[in-house]
Image 1 (cartoon, rainbow, N blue to C red):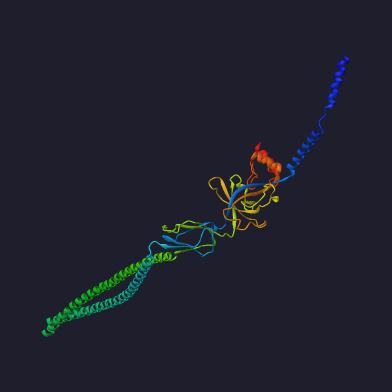
Image 2: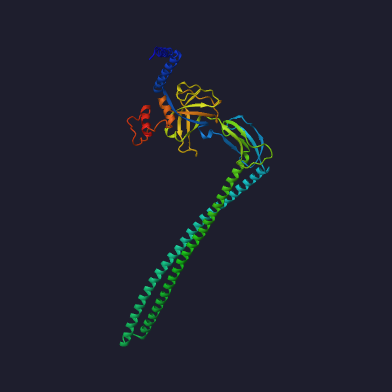
Length: 458
């Protein structure tokens, strides 16, 4: 190699040594490395509050304090309004005066009510008369049956007397026949006179007549007894028939009275509705909208007249959350609320430094969705946090954004979860899927949760 070539190489090495990295570049690179290391450390140690977002509005907790329609109590038209839109009213304040389509309806209803009352009075008199008649028939039945029973008893006694008379007559005839036989035997021997025989024959004939007469009397007594028995049964049956007819008439009268009273009740309702032609406020609130017009417009009973927004004693926030997040929400969870129109600065991951937001607590979660995969969550004020704005600002219908607070995890874990689209937490009451190590199920341990989700993804 020649001296010329050696000199050229030496000059090249000297030129390379003269080219150096600028000091600013080196400082910037060191700063970037430090920032990278600090960022990694911050991602590991900086806490992040997981949350579930939701949007909704302010409503009254009690259904009676939610907006309601004031309806027409009758068929008619409006005479005069006593309120305007936006006016506050108290319970019992007049809202509107109405009148019926028929100007003489009140007089006609009064006449109908008087006629119905008269019908009831007359029906009650008929009922009372029938009750008295039934009591008289029962007394008559008792008297007639007793008399018939006495006659039957007398007939029984006559039959017994006739039977005894018949027995006596037969005994007398037997004695007379024995005497006749004895006299005839004596006459044949010449021991008695013909006169005695004739007297014995006459006595026997009389005794036969007595027996026949006694038999006839017994048959007559027995026939009379049968007649009295039939009369007793007829008397009792006739009395029962008349009593049953009277009771049927009484039942019909009672039914007529009941129908008349029902009709009177209907008339009273109609009269009451016509008398309540001034519609009053059912609850304290504000007139939101006047629907019906004060003119010749005809309104049906039940037609809306105005919309009243009651003054609510307890407002809650109605949030709608996604169905994927619903299993992580339980009653008692802490919520941060941002109300529309109220200045606020919200840091979802650091609620402690948020400004203008208010604390809430989950009251309940609906058992079903709204048909679009959204579930309603009711949030009440947190008693341990600052109170919500007054009703002057927090009116029903004010929109609100809410964040249901879950667990505290590192920022890096949350970023990794967001990139992968995993849920914030796994429900603690459900078993972990097969193949996932569940050595530590504490939801506050973000690293253990990360390992579980990694295993699941693998």
